[in-house]
Image (cartoon, rainbow, N blue to C red):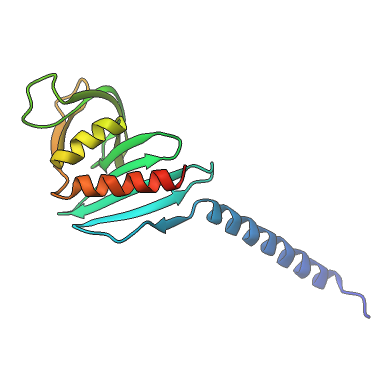
Length: 172
């Protein structure tokens, strides 16, 4: 057996460091894996993502008309609705989320909202999401702004929310 030169030792050390780094990267990627959860329908697709923290985030994502709307239920009991932020950034406590066409104060919830420029999210209770899913649309109005919109989620939103709940139950 012959001794390795200094240069060969450096190459081997670098290869070992790269292999270790690759192993760590694979481990991190494995901790945040997204898997499909059943067949999609009516523009909805379904995923279960195991995040680094161990939380499983069950999502229904609907792409329609350039929009991407998400209904989500995490196995740590956090639920939310997410839409494209269209450049919005910030936090809006006491944002109003409501079912359009209902009298003020009925089917209306004050929720925390936030946006990072790419996505905007509304932290909405699961029972409120069930009500929204039953009618297939909701309206949001950001606190202390004139910014609001009505979001149509489609005719099978209740079925999509039911699939998200099945994912939640399977992962709790």
